[in-house]
Amino acid sequence: MDMNDYLKNNQPIIYKTFVNGLKLNKIHQGYLLVGDSGAPLMETALFLAQSLVCEHDNPLACQECLTCQRIKDNAYSDFYLLDGHNQNIKVGDIEALQAFFARTPIEKAGKMIYIINELENSNQESLNALLKFLEEPNENVYCFIITHNLNALLPTIISRLEILTLLPLKKDILIKEGEENGVSKDDCEIIANFSSSLEELLKINNDKSYLQIKDSVFDFLNALDKDYYSANYLLEKDIIPILKDKPAIRLFLDILSLCFLDMIKLDNQIPITLTMQSSLLQSLKSKLKHVEDSYIELMNAKSKLEININTGLLLEHLAFVIEGD
Image 1 (cartoon, rainbow, N blue to C red):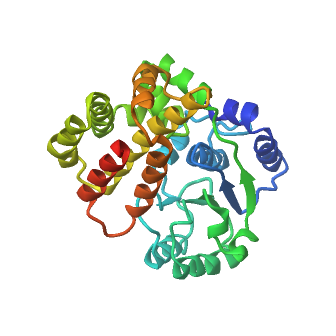
Image 2: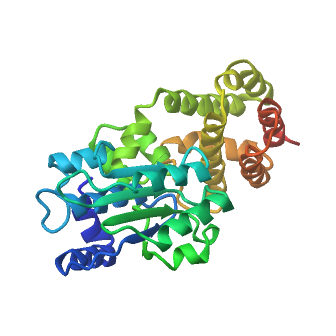
C-alpha cells in the first residue's frame, strides 16, 4: 500500500498534522494511534516512523530507500518494536525498552524511535513503568503507541501523547485491491474482516493454516446442510484435531461467526458480507431453527477461549446448540 496516498485520501487530518509538523519542525515526541481492528494502525505507525528518518522524504517517507526498508524489516539500529498483539506486555519488556534507549543514537539521522503495538495488552505494572518512561523522554526519542481500546490505558499515559484517530480501511476497497493482486473474491470477503491492509490480507491468504481452517468451516457447514450427524461426525473426526491452539480455534469461530451473521442479514434482507457463499447460507438459514441464538453462543465461545476450558467440548457444545430443536 502507498501509505502517502492512503493517508492523504483517507486520513486527511493525520496527513496534514504530520506534514505540517515536519515542515515546521514541530513533531511531538509521542503519538497515540487509535482505531478499531479495521484501521491500518501498524502500517501508519511504521510509515510515520519512516518519515522521521527517510533519506528521500518529500516530506513524508518514500517507503523505498534503504532506511525505510530497514524500519519496515525491524533492522534499523535506532528502532525498537514492542508487539503486544500475540502476548501480554510485561514490566520486563518495558524495562528492556528503557535500557535500549539509555544509549546514544547510532544512525546518522540521530533519532531513536519505538513502536508499541496494542498497549492495552499490558498489566498495571507495565503501564506504570511506561508512564515513568514517558514522563522523562530522552532528547530525540520518538514513540508511536497503538491501541484498539483507549479505555484500557491510564489517563496519565494518554495525556502525554498526541492522539491520532484512524478510520478503518473500507472493506470494499480492500477486497478490490486483494482481487487485483490475485486473491479469490471468496477469500477477500473473508480476510477483509480480519485485516487492515493489503499486505496483511495477502499474508493471511498465503498462510496454510488459514486455508485449512477456512476449508474446515465450510466443510462443517456443508455437512450441516445435509444433517446434524454428518456435521458432528466431521467435527469430531477431522476438524477438532487440526484446531491445535487458541489462535486456530479463534479463527475457526471468527469465520463461522461471519457466516451466522450473514444468515441473520439474509433473514432481515440486509446485504451480506460473504456473497460467494450466499447459496449455502440461504439453504442453512431455511433449515436451522436458532440462527440468532447460535450467533450469540459463538460470541460467548470466543470469550471463553481466554479461560482454561476444554476446547473440544466447547466446539461439540456449539454444534449441539446450532442444530438444537
